[in-house]
Amino acid sequence: MGRPVEVAIDLPRLELDRPFTYLLPDDATAPVGSVVSVPFHGRTVHGWVLGATQDVPSRVLPVRRVLSKEPVFDERALGLFAWMRERYVVPLSVAIDRAVPPRVASEEGGSSPAPPEPGGPPPEVLGRYEEGGRLLTACHGSGGGVFVVRPLPEDEAAVCVEAVQATVAGGRDAVVVIPEVDPLPRAASAVLEAAGSAGVLFAGGDRRARYRTWLEILRGRYRVVVGTRPAVFSLVRRPGLVWVHREAHAVHREERTPAYHPREVALARAELERAVCVLAGLSPSAHAAAMADDRAAVLVRTPRERERAAAPLVETTKPADEDRSTRLGTMLRSARGAFLLVSRRGYGTARICRACGEPARCAVCHGPIVVRERREVCAVCGAGGRCAACGAADFGVERGGTERIEEWARGVTKLPVRRVDDGAAAGPEPGEVVVGTAAAVKDLGPRSIGLVGILDADRARRRAGLEAPEQVLATWFEAAAWAGPRAEGGRVLVQTREPGDPAVQALVRWDPLHFHRRERARREEAGFAPGVPLFRVLGSPQLEEALRALEPAHLLATPLGDQAVCLVAIRPDALAAFRERILGLVGERVVERVEAEPRL
Ligand SMILES: [Zn+2]
Ligand SMILES: [Zn+2]
Image 1 (cartoon, rainbow, N blue to C red):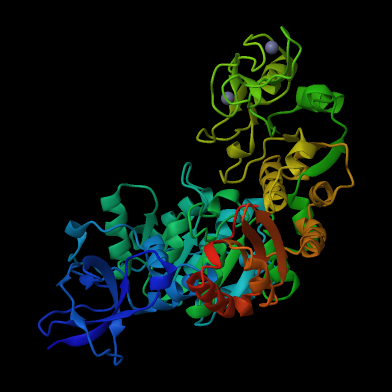
Image 2: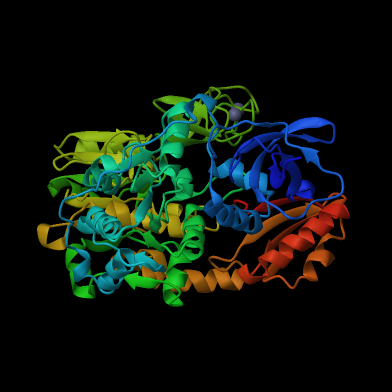
């Protein structure tokens, strides 16, 4: 007759988001995480076995087939998926689809040898950090906890390696999440080197390789997993540490639905699995800084004097035309090497049409026209620059951008000058001048090139987006660290008309927390406190009233034709109630769509 099991159906619809009971044939084995095909309203659909159940309805259908030769997740993952489902208001199937890479059936049913014991002496750096001993004890022991780690630039890889090795030595496994792999951050390569064949890079590769690695991790083949965003879901055997490297970095965030952030997943796993969560970076995110401020996280940093001694000397000056200044010219002329950070690519921006005098706009899409690689092109659609009003291609151009700064720098310094626009190329080495945007700022290991210029700080600071200020500041710290310690002549010049701005002052004082206290107050006043879940809900005109009844932390309603859009902030402890209510409102057709963490 068969055994009743609960199955999550792979249909991404909130109204179907509950387990369904099916009968598993007596001769079939299908542990938690097995992929099955089942009948559903006259169709055959895929689903995942969630476990045995006592809850058997009067009419129950049999599982058609067990598709996977081995489960694609295990029981421990259920807690994490349930958390995703509630946090991002998505069906369980969407949470599973996001965490588990697509199946490649031929990779299933294999076996993996037990991992070797990684050896080698760990670096000894954290002992010199305030609360560093506490972090090591937590990693080595059996408990959890949240730590915000602010390493010295020279220690950025070593602190990570040391924590990972303490975790492994204590009998647990570690996951290190990095923002990108091209190039591989220095911290990531150092961790992999130390782990030897007990470690794996879970990033990139083809579908087959990704799925194979996922299964190998699930089988317990590795003690240390390093990878980009999806690696945060790695089901290592005994999770002891989830480390998020450069956690304020813009590319950590998932852009597709659900727009999860590995920082939040890492925090959730730490709580669910009693693991240590580390949020690391030279300048923390607003969320991490707020947790440290509230003592919800332990701040790990060096004593202030060491921090300042390892930092470059930062000064400010007013920018002149084309994002340059006399001071910059003077410093560049005598620099032994430099990195010049500019927020705009290209050579300049077309302002007016010389033929008809109208403001310059793309004839195809009315977008702005910029000059790149000596060509006038539309910044939006990429069409050749033609005036929308008269079709002419002759513009008055305001110069400024990486290409213009590159050209200018060649006339100032005798050092070789290089431009990095796309970020794949390696960063500055001593003895050269590199001009680049934020895309060029990567974890390349410590360097001491001499001079770092932040050329258009005000424009960068004014970038739109709720999280833009914290990301801009993190980029500044990461770039500024390349200058090297002040004792070795490390100098940073920030060109700004507002030297008193908190972000600029944070850099001058080499203290990001100074900025974050101000930023937090600003965010709280606007109703969007750091770390408070945010949703965009689309629905009928009754939506606002329905959501207000939930007493959200904040609500902004905008009418949109005969519909309404609400931006709503929900305190973490009210998420379960919010989800319930949304599901009810979906049934009543008041809610049409919910999007967690919209890009603001
Ligand atoms: Zn265009
Ligand atoms: Zn014209």
